[in-house]
Length: 618
Image (cartoon, rainbow, N blue to C red):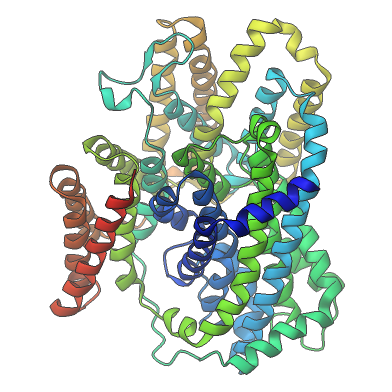
């Protein structure tokens, strides 16, 4: 208990940490309102800012950002009926119906209170989990770490959109990408192709930005116009904030649902909000039917949406197993800050866990008055056209990658991973499992090597390993039985055979390369290559009969993509601020239909911001 309050005192006494908390909360609220920038993309866009704060305060910034990004994301879902990500879709059902009845401000108020309470419950769960984890951590050795990492990879069943073979293919690719660099045991280079820039491994920022941010921002999406956006009046917002007390038991139950769902790796926010919404419909009677403006239909998903963060932080921080794809990106951002998560962090610096828990609580509580203060402005900002936001977001994505590793190498990697992200998206191959494989791959390799050296085959006879592997088998069986038919992704797209062939080729080359390496360096390649060959074979069996009837994926926005590639060249060879300014100015004029004076002003401000971030880097 003393460590809990010491962490709070450390947060309050540090001006840098408090500044990071406020900046992270404001940035998260802004990102949630911005079309095309959800929690995953936003985390990568703000990572350079976190680096400028330093490791401890930078972690506070990232947690604050991630804790509130979905709180403000509910504003456009409620007022405009346009969720900024899948996690706000459940809120939009009744929230937008309330707006049509003239009660949008009341729905926003209920969202704020429910989100703050849910975040508080999630953080309390994180606090209570620490002593339990410390008692169990002494029984976890290298075999259990490897088994837990393998169990975490099975969360691809939830991250693959119902296509388990596709998720396993992506995991294979992620593990192989994680193997790039110098093997820490034998000192042998793997997949470096003679390039010094790859000796330290792949740039995590380039991987995440290329996989997720670029494909989403370069997608062709018609701008949704709302010439007269409804305004959120402060009196209505306050009324909605107070009204959640009448639904306090639903609020508590939904928060607990969010914690439990968040604790299970791979389920994530989308599952949490819909489970909570379904629970509300089944157990909580309202005067207004659900789907027609029931305020309980807003409270339940919003409470679960924020409480699940505390639950998902437990496996992420304690075991290094991300509870969701967003947590995987958070782990990549922590790696950029030089923060090591997992059992060692829990035993050596438990106060750091409490610091993050307090940051979660404080950011959720801070979001309420900020949103009350900014409610009218937020409703106007939520009406921004996507084609006017995308150029600035792309420039931020470019800066987020380049500032983590200045030079041509990061830009070249961003080109490669952007092409891979576009291919996987156009092929219906899930991308989140690839990130999971990239994050968990080193842990699996380390656990396997240490287990073989110390325990040999007897590692599989350890009770903890048997329990974890039994749980893994149960997950596989449950996944297979719960979905007997074909998913939409298993029917494939015209580009799907290209992705399958690429992963099969990479898997075969990995197995062949492993035969030339020492056992410690080649073991993980045998495992990943074998998994890749099996999963691609299964994917061919599933997809091939339907491939000739599969549609072509919608092509990305060619001009925007070309401008982005041009900015990569300018940023790598000349100047990053210049690249950001040129990209924003040209894209605003070409796609955003903004006049030259305004476009030039925004470009100048963007270039100045990037230049400032460059100067902040250590």
